[in-house]
Image (cartoon, rainbow, N blue to C red; front, side):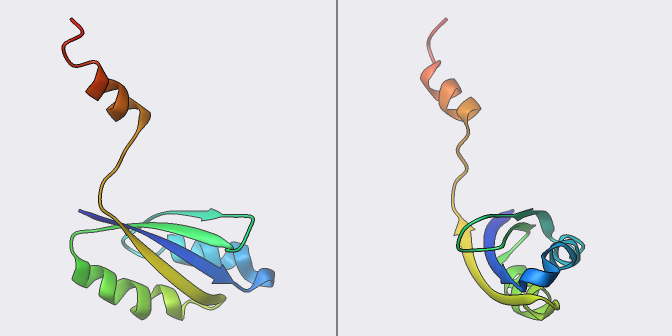
Length: 92
């Protein structure tokens, strides 16, 4: 499974509607509205890179209110639980 983080600039008068339309796209796991340089962050989870190649330019970028996207592909996931488990090895 491939995880991608898509940073989205959106029209300010349609952020909520744009976010919901993005969230409704198959392959989009979560959408967050943000403060700062970007308006929305979408987390995508798809089986392969070809799905990303179709999903972002073919669907997300065409949603009304989407002005620009920047895609970042995740290579590895880290969490507090993972880190604590790694350092707990042999603690018994």
